[in-house]
Image 1 (cartoon, one colour):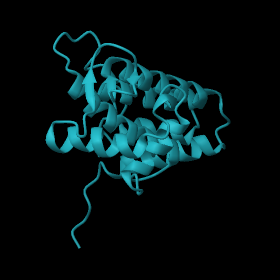
Image 2 (cartoon, rainbow, N blue to C red; image 1 turned 180 degrees about the horizontal axis):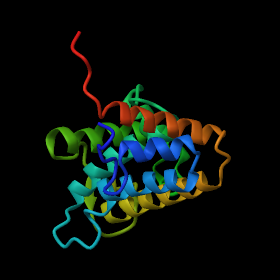
Image 3 (cartoon, rainbow, N blue to C red; image 1 turned 45 degrees about the vertical axis):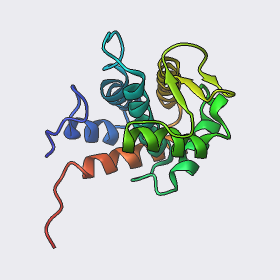
Length: 187
C-alpha cells in the first residue's frame, strides 16, 4: 500500500523517500499538512462549526501530536497523564497545566463518550481561553492555540538536526503510521 495517502499530496512511498534522503522540509510539511487537513481546516471559515465538535477534534489532535512528539505508537499512558504532560509542555495551552487529569476525565471523555461535559465544565466559542472559576473553555481559542503548537513544532523540526531526539521521535511515529496502512497477516 505504498500509494496510501498520508495527506492529500503525500503517499507512504513519498514519505519513505523523504525519510531516506533526510528531507526535513518535506517531512515537516507532511506533518503540518496532515494535522491541518485532519484537525484544523474543517473548522476554519466554517459557519456550521460547533464548540463541542471542535473540542472533540482538539482532544484527538492532542493525543496524536503527543504521540508524534514522543515517538509513541499509542499513548500508552493513562489519559490524564498524557494531557498533564501535553499541557505542561505546550507553549500555547499552559493555562491548562495542572488540569490535565480533570480535563481528560470531565471534558475529553465526556465529549467523546457521551457527547457532553461532566462536573459543570462548559464549552463556548467566546470569552477567554479558560475561565478557571467557571470551568469554561473557549473552543475557538483552544483550537487556535493547538494550531500554534503545530506551527511551532513543525518550525522547530525544520531547524533541528536530523539526528536529534525530536526527529527520532517524529520518524518513529510516522513509521508506525505507515505500518498501520498495511493489513496484518492472519495468524
